[in-house]
Structure formats: C-alpha cells, structure tokens
Amino acid sequence: MSVAVETGTWQLDPARSTVGVQHKTMWGLVTVKGTFTGLTGEGEVGADGAATGSITLDAASLDTKNAKRDTHLRSADFFDADRHPELTFVVRSAAPASDGAVQVAGQLSVRGNSRPQSLTARLAEVSADAVTLTAEFIVDREQFGMDWNQLGMMRGRTTVTASLRFARTAS
Image (cartoon, rainbow, N blue to C red; front, top):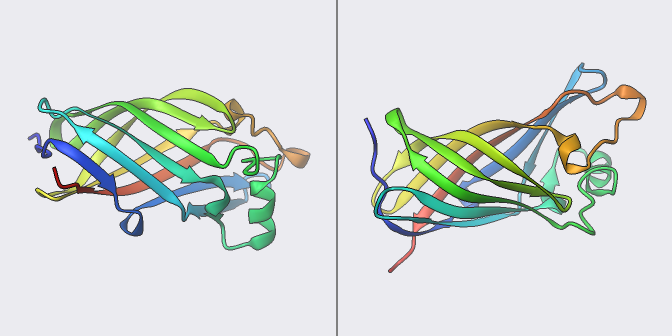
C-alpha cells in the first residue's frame, strides 16, 4: 500500500520535529544521547510523488543535558561549530515505496565534509496539510573528520534518529 503525499512545497515545523544522536562512550559502557534544538528545512513533492529538499541543523544547538560535554562537542575536537555552524542533509531523491516506507538518497555535510547518505524513512503521518517522516540511520563520525578518541573511549558509529513534521505551504 502506497500513501500519496500532496504535491507542492512543504516547510519543516521545528517545534514539532526532532533530530537526535546517540553514541557509545566510556569504552562502550555509556550511551550519550543528545538532541539538536535548532533545525530548519523544506521540501518539494513532485507530481510523481518523488521529493527533494534539505534539513539544516545548528551545530551549536546540540543538547546532551551536560554543559561541559556540550561545550566539548561544539569544539574543534567534534563539530567545530565556530568554523562549521551548520550540518546539512540535502535530499536528492525521496521516493515512496510500499507500506509507508520512503527510500531517501542524499548528501550529508558535517564539518565541511560531504558524503552520500541513503536511508529508509517511514511516513508516520500523512494528511493534506501535514506529513511526518521518521528515520533512524548510522553515521561513521570519522568520515566527517571527527576522530577524537581519547584513550580509545569512543568506538563505533553514531545513531541518528529523526522525526520531521512538514506543513504544506500555501501555493
């Protein structure tokens, strides 16, 4: 069963959207979780149901509920937020598949490094005026120049989770 999304332009509703990250640290014993509180985005759905668009995150808005850690994450060891204030995901194509799945292909840019990123999102809500997509995918932070790893404390990859609500804009 494929669910149709209205054609046109869509704007991200940041108050009803979340993008979070989680990563194991302390030699895999502790999972650090954080949420980006600054996000914007837009998209366009064509007559064939395929979509394009972008999501932008404010690198300095990552909140892990620990001020000292957040300051370190904004530093040059990680996001280097002073030099690279934004993380972006540009959607080159998003095509509906069966059962509410959406195959997404795009380009993820972090710290001035861009890499292709593919993922499967899910349509969690669809109406004439609103669409909510959810997704979870894995990112290798070292591909984006984030290789700080004091005493081997940080291993593995980062899990990104997103719930993105878009509202249809007036035509």
